[in-house]
Structures are given as C-alpha cells and as structure tokens.
Image 1 (tube, rainbow, N blue to C red):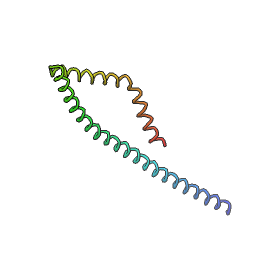
Image 2: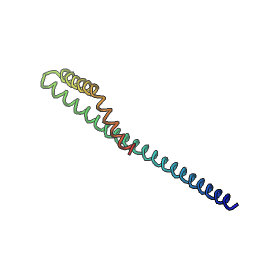
Image 3: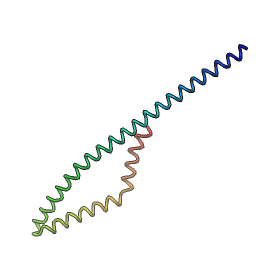
Image 4: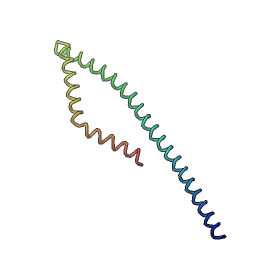
Length: 115
C-alpha cells in the first residue's frame, strides 16, 4: 500500500502544481490584456487630442494663407482655390503612399504587442 499512497501523493502534488500554473497563467494574461488595452486607449486618446489641435491650427493657417494669396493675386477666391488645390494634392500623395503608413503603424504595434 505504500507505493499506492506515494503515487497518490505525487499525483495530488502534480494536480496542485498544474492548478497553480493555470491560475498564474490566467492572471498573467489578464494583466497583459489590461496593459495592451490601456496602452492602446492612451495612444488613441493622445492622438485624438494632438490631432484635433493640429487640425484647428491647420485650418487657421490655411485660411490665412488663402487670404494672403488672394491679396497677392487681387482676388480672394483665387487664394482659396489655390489652397484647396494644395490640400487635394497632399491628400492624393498620402493616398498613394498609404501602404507605407500602414506598414509603419503595424511595425509600431508589433513591437509593443509581441515583446
């Protein structure tokens, strides 16, 4: 009977170790998910705030540039048309290199998520 008790004790210890490993792994993954979610939310929040301020600044800069160009050309509407054309050209260029932007974003997230 001594051998059977020894096997029983060993199997009980192995089960306890397995349960502890499972619990610790579950805690680790919860913390890891929390870290990734909080990092992502923080980054999106900062990007929205900074983007909004930059967007407002860009609007004011565009209006000022359009008025200045319009004064130089003698007609304010021409200034607005030129500034709009510049924005369309920049948007087209960004659209053409969008795959490079996607690659840079994926590489940035890859280093943060799979470290």
